[in-house]
Amino acid sequence: MYVNPRESSLSASTLMLVGTVLFFMLILVSSNNFICLYIALEGISLLLFVITAQPKTFVSVEAGLKYFFQSSFASILLLAGIALVFAATQDFDFVGIN
Image 1 (tube, rainbow, N blue to C red):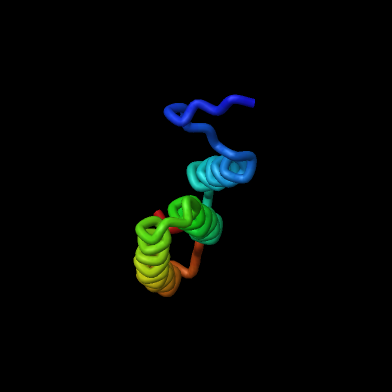
Image 2 (tube, rainbow, N blue to C red):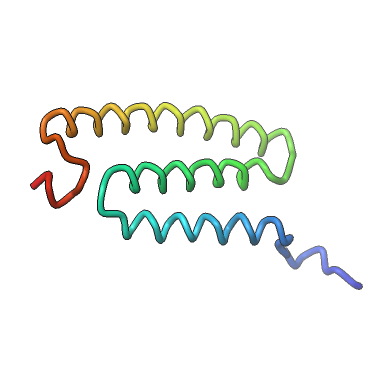
């Protein structure tokens, strides 16, 4: 099979990762409470830094690690904010917080 070097193609594993990211994005926009929102955001971020580091060059692995550490710091801040909202309202649902 002839492969044109100018034509970029995605492998089956990359397509599976992108499909799973899209699945988590659908969960994100349809979430009704903070638990579903957090799980969807974590699923998206975990899969995206795998996709970022997938070419396995020095630059891409470094970018994946940087993205991982920034994502984990943002996750901690999000959990702290969710905990504060829960402490004030005693509810995780978006409708109950109003």
